[in-house]
Image (cartoon, rainbow, N blue to C red; front, side):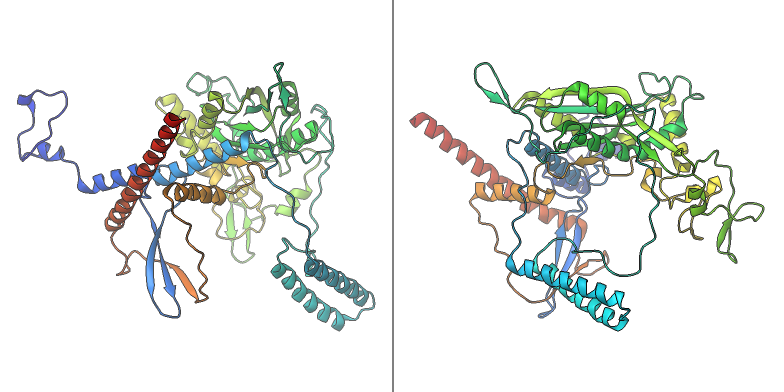
Length: 546
């Protein structure tokens, strides 16, 4: 038996051949398959989809990547998603032209359908005024047919709201700014999305952009490892509410910034926790904005949470099956959600603001700092929020545990089961609710309150979706290999797709599927490397000839 030598051990200290220690030195074949698959970027848990031709009955199973974005689930898919996000940020950061052109004019056929829809709306209004309800039903049927024709003609969205049952009126809150918030200048937002062009003394023009970091306020002094100096005075309740409402604050910030500077500012960034576990955000901004303006807008931005005010979560609710309502320990029904909202006066339950720390730096195109900033923005997007920073000390573990316990009982929405802990029935309450055990993502330990999207990209950033960027990458590989794109299927035969079950007899074992994918990927990698070498050879020959 050939035994691999242990590093750092003398020959006489090597394990005895045939012993358990010697066998443990031999790598497992299954682990080698997974390691090689991960090295070549192959999904480690592909999803088998069964494609059935309904005319011939022929079936085949096609493996598709799982598409995980976290490395603890599938490292190759997570790394592929991170590279794609880097490409998206890179392509949109220093654009010199508008990424999204306006829509093309409507065709004559589309305009004719809109005209017909207008006549039907007018006729329906006449019938309603004259109480001709039979005629109203006929017009409604005609309206549905016309709107289906409009959608088939290629117009986006709906023409007008439907004439069904009127929806309940929404509660309106005053939009007047708070007296304790600084005033903000407001301009009409120009549709321009590219930044300003600057001219150097030598006549060269350049269009710089920015990198921005915004944070939340302090909840108490913290040490260098992020743990609080005094856990008993650290405001965990406000930290939990801020973490849940942080996405709304970011939306309000970009809205205020665009209104302040007067043009459609575009951004791409990520949200991640600091060492103190409070979320903060890094953004790449197209164009430049004075730092004083950014600080002014951040200081004047806030978000009000118009929910019922709550105290300590000391209610022990019980479900009354006969009355179909939640009651307290004495059997008295809890306050209904609408009643709790009616009791709100002029003060919201919570107000979230940014902290004083704000970092803004200028970045030029084709600069090493630009690529470094892109790497920093996408550094933690493949990790769960709880794994972004290593927890190594008891103080950090206790801090994480206290923050998570507060997050578990903090309401996350109007339907959150945690409202029952405060004596309030959430909206559309039912018997399946479990107080203190809401299934919302913000309450999970792995999210630390960051329950929404970790990656935030404005609509007109690159003018492309992630699917478009994937297509561009495939088109680049095809062009390098000299392979034409496959023709779209023109067959009209009906095809059915379904998820293959693990116990299906025609579904191969996972290791067989990984080995087949590995062989195919090795062939692709060799062909791609050969094409690159040939291109470099041509470029070198052309340079020598020139």
